[in-house]
Amino acid sequence: MNISNHIEALLFLSGKPLSIKEICKILDKKEREINEAILDLEKELNGRGIRLLKADANIMLGTAPESDEYCKSLIKEEIDRNLGRAGLETLAIIIYKNEGGGVSRNDIDRIRGVNSAFTLGNLAIRGLVDRKINPKDKRSFVYKPSVRLFQFLGITKKEDLPEFEKFSEQIKCEKLFTIQ
Image 1 (cartoon, one colour):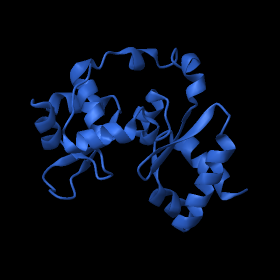
Image 2 (cartoon, helix red, strand yellow):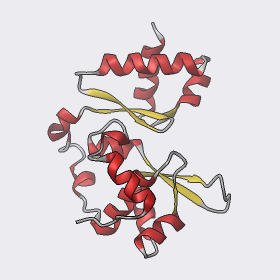
Image 3 (cartoon, one colour):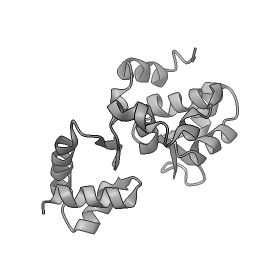
């Protein structure tokens, strides 16, 4: 059995995102070998009902965007629950402003002009964002888009979002931020 098959089994069994480092440790392989196997797995899954979802250094198995309409009935309540304007604004900031290290609540609050603590908590409970300790200030957190969010959006990486480069640059420069 090749490494990509083992990675697929681990991702299937875990049901949650795994980091490249976790996979390296479990399989006792070097990061280069794991990354090559991940590329192979991604190719093997292309055109099937399951896809490899990536968010930063985390990967997870998810459903193919083409199967979305059929899968919605299984998770309808979660998907159909309205996030509201605050949730959508916050998700947009986290996705488009994220430069790999995550976005702090202070940055989100400054851009939105309001306290986002409740909204961030709601998004975290739904599994749409991941919260990590801020490497620049251990007393605070940074937020990143979760692999589950990518699954709900039907994408495999943030660069698949509409006009990602354009909006990402505008949000980084804070020249534009309104959701219609």
